[in-house]
Length: 461
Image 1 (cartoon, rainbow, N blue to C red):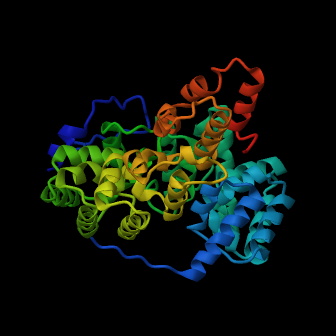
Image 2: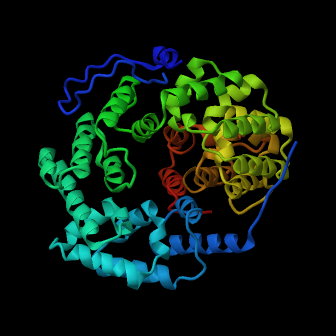
């Protein structure tokens, strides 16, 4: 079975240019009507507080703050304030702190005095300057999750070496930074990945991970060769994800998983392409694969439609899909409309319920402070152009609607509904097209300046 997948997924590459990779692999693996919901009021309260706190304290965007709040939440600011103040006392900028919290949000709820402060003291004792400390920790914040002073110090030194090696292109000196054995293998394997072009931002998590992905030798080299031959781009996270999957799954398990997909009408080529786009597809259990397909049927999709939509719904849990069905139903979309939306914009399933409600109500509401009545959308229009749900409220929807409102108020778009531009064209065209059609095409320089201010968000109607 794996040979069939290999036929679909393999590409010819010469690996001799990477001297650290010398294992020859003979048979490389390749890939080539139910509405329910649950709510937790206390959890939601903490999430709302967390979102507000992150926006106010660190200036994060609403979307990013919401994403972090799904991983960690709290209902009072004393401990997170202590964490942020401690960071600032060591010279971390708000930008660096934001990057750290985004990558390792659990820092906000650990004990600031007993755990966090001591770890920063240990790192400072390495003799690094303030700028070296802040740069190193902000690049690999999970160093602060390690236990034991010696472990923290050792990994800190190694991360600093990687940063300096990246600047000087002398990565080989890392081989002398760690003790013999497993850590030496890790250095060697990370060196191979770096030679392949894997960027630092992807190397760092592997460095401090407790997984065995880069600690072995033979298995690592064999798996790496397979992933390279499948054509994954080493500069992307998919490359590392694929490596993790290939190294953690046996040939027998591959065949069994392919057979599961085949029973659901996928062919080997489908499986290959799905693995290339979403490596995690080969780690789903048979139960989860079947459940996702059954749930998509509840959305009203036909079998061939499920085959095209399924890969993009891999990251959505059963609960998420069911919640999405309920959300769209509550907003007034019919089952057929929802099926159409999922088919043409599968990612709508992954958008949070709050975001879907906010954008839909904004676009179809008869009157609000951003749009006059004539600019409203019928609900059916949103169903026909579900891509608008993936647009940013702050960066696209509101600024463009403000521009259109200004033009309408000045009578520059005509007074009859038939003369108004199609709303989907206004929102879905590129920035350059929008500016050309509705902003820069006016002779009045003051008007153009006013519209540009609205477009850039410097002014709000």
